[in-house]
Image 1 (tube, rainbow, N blue to C red):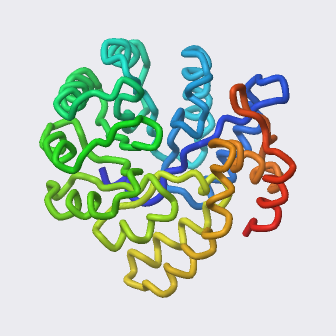
Image 2 (image 1 turned 30 degrees about the horizontal axis):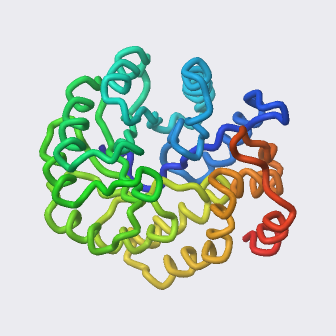
Image 3 (image 1 turned 30 degrees about the vertical axis):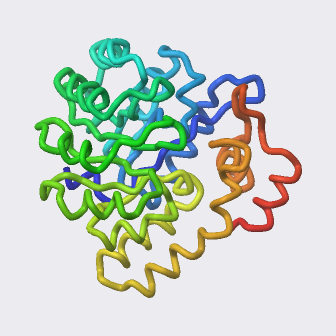
Length: 287
């Protein structure tokens, strides 16, 4: 799956003030991010998948596939904490043209590691396209451990993991013991360079919505063995990263995108668009 190496952008879903999807804004976003990213990720957390209907999700996926002028690979998010519902959604979704699905570890009900393993085993069995695991304990309230990840990595249809645990030791264990072709992908923008150094293949990024060229340079320098130049690109993102999450993702990055003239800053409840204090922080720290 070399086509999924480098930077995947976890696309926001642009919206009008009334919450309707802004397809004109989405088209501009595809063009903007296409300047530097290697693939698109549709309906991740950053896409506000939790507050879009199934019909809307499919409509956004269809729009991205039809307006993908750079012919970049597309990864689509399908996950949840009801295994049967996840399987049904995979079966009911037309995944023609999709390179892989990104599936989050079950959240809220806090299953055991064996339960997580069996959940993803079922997902891998049903999915007609490869599966990328997504570990984000800060949202799911449970950690997909390195040992469980490595067990899952041996299954035929599971090709990688988006690791957003913030646990570098866990990432190192995966990097050391994983099958050669299993992809370790950073799920945290600030860990991008660190995971490249450990043998990771890239990042699925929030800030790449705004700064795709920085991530392209970071990747190119890292792959070329130029750590000082790669560090320079990574450090550009240091001050702007934290404000992205202060009031919930994608509140911060949508406001940042509005400053760049890409799309509007609006989100759906229960999120609210950026407060005045957050706006000032983003304006002061934008690259």
